[in-house]
Amino acid sequence: MNLSSILVNNRICEILGIEHPIIQGGLAYVGNGRLAAAVSEGGGFGQIGSAGRTPEGFEEEILIARQLTKKPLGVNIPIRGYEDTDKYLEIVNKHKRLIQGVSLGGGNPQPLIPQLKAMGLKSLVMTSTVKQAQKVEQIGADIVICEGYEAGGNNGAAELTTLVLVQQVAASVSIPVVAAGGISNGKAMVAVMILGAEGVQMGTRFVATTECEAHENYKNLIVQAKDDDTIIMSRYIGGPRRVLKNDFALRTQAIERETPSVEEILPLLKGGHNKRAAIEGDIENGFMGGGQVSGLIEDVISAEQVVKQVMNEAGNIFRKSNCN
Ligand SMILES: Cc1cc2nc3c(=O)[nH]c(=O)nc-3n(C[C@H](O)[C@H](O)[C@H](O)COP(=O)(O)O)c2cc1C
Image (cartoon, rainbow, N blue to C red; front, side):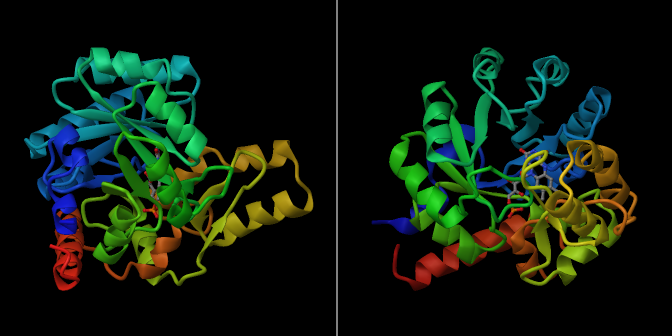
């Protein structure tokens, strides 16, 4: 089998019109246009995040990204109440010629996929179980992203890790699979491709880049993080969410464990607390999404360089293993 060819000529590259099957995941608050453009310039698929932005702010970032690159770009829309989602979809529709695909997560994508198809856009859907992935295929998504429990940000309730999830999803669907969660380098990319993925999505690695608008204190925290420096801040109330370990996250976790109360926990999960730490840099008094992979990230470099390094490393591994 010509394994190294799956790095370049695969269905993810074909569907999205990209050179390298590396996707920058939606990043609440910190998935800005400059970052997305840099990923796309590197040959990957950069995505502008809508979470944490007003529809106007989201539109502005799409326009910024499009000024910086002519290569394919995407956007990410977490599915909230449909009314709210509609405002972001309107922006997508208005600028449908500027983007190639939309990734959806956190809700039922069924009503949205036909709308995206009608706009001529590809749909990528986030999943965290085999059942969800099969459903996503059945309702017509172009790409299924399966995200393991190591991942930064909101996690699936089934708590499946990337290693087991990718294999089972790849064996259960025929649309192309992208692996997410725990990937920051070429070794991990090769590993998930051997398991059946045709592409990778990275989140935490792209936060620690020069183009990302995350505060410097947040990026430094990722670089300094060790293997056990992330926690699930809220597991039962509000849904599991993996964040960097800090006072705020530990306090929230303790409340949930010791005196669980919806009234107390839900206000702590509000976006304002995310913004305070992630954008304003008050890293003890708010929360910041971060995956277990933080322990493997050692520098803040440009997003374009991240894409190139990961591809080089993956390509070298395939070559050395005489797989080509
Ligand atoms: C700070 C942060 C914010 C995130 N926000 C979103 C989001 O708004 N929408 C989404 O679909 N995924 C979101 N994710 C998940 C990522 O898109 C990606 O799937 C995940 O980070 C992959 O795992 P990794 O962190 O181990 O690379 C977020 C992840 C992080 C780290």
